[in-house]
Each structure stands twice: as structure tokens, then as C-alpha cells.
Image (cartoon, rainbow, N blue to C red; front, side, top):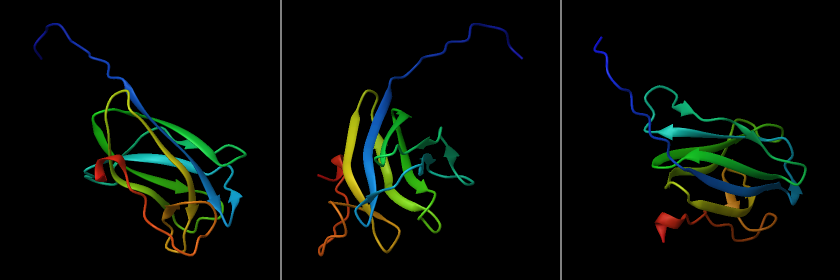
Length: 126
């Protein structure tokens, strides 16, 4: 092994926030995990955070990467999809607002189970 100087460069994290509801009720203690993509095996999982008593979460992710965000816990059969292929930049803040768990296990924007549910439009999709 060649000896020499090792240079480590720290990157600013991105912050992703939101609130999870199921039938209008806060989803408390649900684990939110970000998985770096592309996945080679099951994906590299980042530190898992939990929703608070109001269903709110704050997730810090290294910038410059793309992630799939999932929710797992009570009231979710397998896992709920919060976002797919979410790309974050260093220092960026993304607030998903209030998200409701749909029948397809995907979270959708808007309070409660609305008659017309829509998929979340992420900043890079605009």
C-alpha cells in the first residue's frame, strides 16, 4: 500500500421534512429510511429517523446523491413509498408537507384521503 496524505472533504447535508398521516391521524414512531440509488444489492441505507407524536420527520441526507425514501412501521403492511429517485444537493431543504398513506402504500400530497389523490411533484419534476 502506498503511503501518502489522505484528503477527506466533508459535504453539506440536505434536509428532507414532512408529516405522515393515515386516515387523517398522525403516524407516530414510523421509521423513515433513505436508500442510496442505484441499488446494487438492497441499497445503502442511511441513518433511520422516526416520526414524532405529530407524524413529523426531519431526515438529513448527504447531498449530491439520489435516494428512495421509505416509511416502515405500525399501520404499514410492507413499506410506504415517500419518494423514488429523489436527488438532493448539499444544503438543500425539501419539505414534502403533509402526506397521506394511500391504498397502494404510496404517500400522496394533501390532508386526509382526498377524492382526487395525486402523486407528489418533486422539485426536479417541475
